[in-house]
Length: 348
Ligand SMILES: [Mn+2]
Image (cartoon, rainbow, N blue to C red; front, top):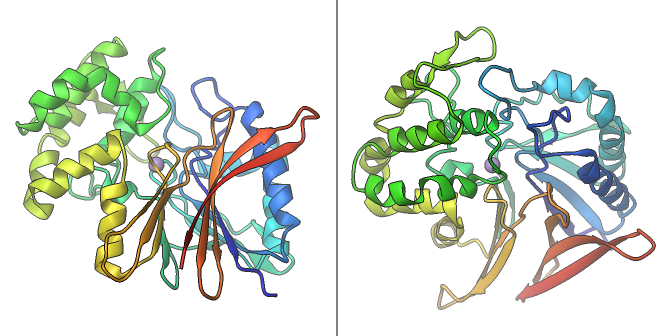
């Protein structure tokens, strides 16, 4: 039988092991072992999809430049990962790469060394196979969607600067939603005003003990930006979204940052008749089967986060007459061997 499984791994955030980065060597072992396991399943696994934020180009304090993709691919500590990934490229039908927000500027050209057995990693903007659809999902999230209006040069969203500011503090910050705890009170008030981005930066500045005059060092050829400039730059963010997408959509675009992207998953299903939608970005693994239509059910799944003790991923087995969707948790047995715990839903 032809291979029919598709595996979605997201939010690995591979950088260069700086102390302010999320991905450590502890997470590396799980990733290398998992990729090796997948590479040996070429007879059942058709596609491996790296569903965004596979690399980390955002996390660094304001006075330090975040690692770029060239450095990450060259970094000795990432060699085992690259080799395991190459084994996947060689043995599976396809390995696809999608940009997330933390690796939004990575291009196919940057990844051209990821070649094995005469095949290359394939950059795509979304994954679509029959009624199965997947993407990272940050374009639905107000603070992390590419933003050419406020940053025409590179499209950096407000979230980039949020990452830089929180990386300058000792605060725990490991998901888009974790800024909620710092801005919770503000958020309610801010939602009714046009100053939501200014208020968030204000709150985080306090958390990180920085001032409006603090400069944020930017990758070449850009000049540094003062925090007060960032505040001003993104001041109209909420207004712009409401004008473009309406109030309800914009509210959900903030909910998408804090809680779940399910509303957008459903929207994709309704508009395109998809049966299975897989997103990522929130760092919260989830799976939900629901009857939205008279004619058929749909499954919304989120791949979760790799940078945790028990990483998660989504597996979709697209068989002739059904979709088997599994939310998979990576664990270790007593002998230290990889053990995958599965929660399954089936859709005819
Ligand atoms: Mn993301």
